Image (cartoon, rainbow, N blue to C red; front, side, top):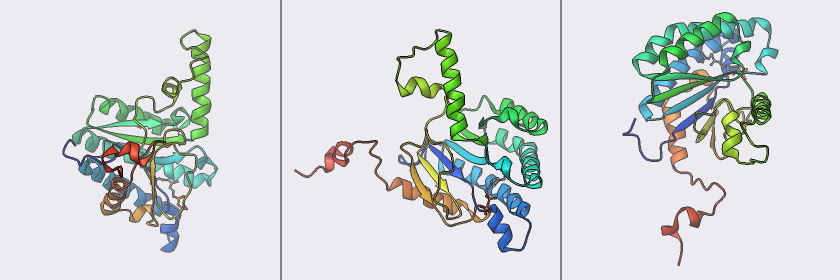
Length: 248
Ligand code: FPP
């Protein structure tokens, strides 16, 4: 981890898109694309660790994905359960902590049970974190945070006139996570799709045409290299960020 280059993104978040098209291009049912997508998930968790990325967030199921055909939703839930059953040992071996963001209490009981088991078994690891966004939507996250914040104000634990982001952001699902530095979306789509809208306020974005089942370690490394060449200014000027390079 510590041997990663200084400008390696600490937190990379990925919108894994294109499973359906990957399958359709091969005349296969969409679920085959998701199955291949799970293989990519496993490879990319490994690759992220090797590249020195501390936190990897994967958009695995959005709050809007329930609108898909029931058999596809069922298959995705089955794949999640299968992934958790199969991968827990590897996560433990590689000392990766699993976290979730989203309304996970609305997931099927089988998936919830596997999630709870894996989260508990990996909770003590501090080296890397895998975050699965499950039944996640940024708008529902803001609603949940606003509700929790209002309850805290009513209980006298927060002050209504405290307008600091540092305070409010403690009520987001990501309260114990750093903001993503780099957000990647595969499959050529250039949308954010209700993903980490608050946390990605200053993130760099990389959009790649590669469909998720074809996304490789080399593609992740290329996105990390592109990130490393960007200048992040957080609202400041280039000269403020790099005083040494200011023309006299
Ligand atoms: C988008 O492709 C992908 C999803 C909605 C689900 C992503 C899920 C996986 C990769 C597998 C399960 C995840 C884990 C962590 C085990 P799409 O179906 O929208 O593709 P399309 O736009 O080409 O139709």
